[in-house]
Image (cartoon, rainbow, N blue to C red):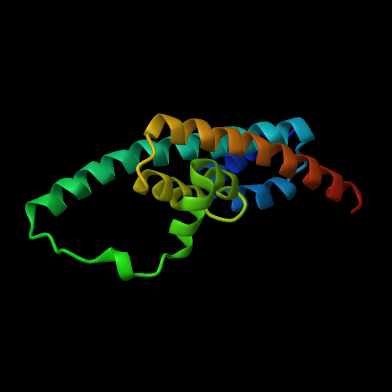
Length: 148
């Protein structure tokens, strides 16, 4: 049984920066179940906090932006960036799927909220994605560590 410090550290790191938490979890002597629970709990807490704070920040930003002078820009001729292409092709599910391993939680959450996804749907999609990736990383990490 690992120490409480290991649980707290891995969970807190997964809440802040998921992949850093994964790496720290591999450095501990946590079992598959312990790794999975720490990864999923930390990642889910981070997603919920980023979603809730992101919604508040978006409301504040829109209020501030509407108070100032708004610029008109013709977006019809501008090239789509990678974020818009992913959103157009895969939507919330695609952003949620690539958030834990590729994007970080704040970026994935900000993209989802920025494209207008409702906060409750962002939380559900991100937590399902975190569940999946937590299983993958806990299993693969535990399997790889057994060889060393």
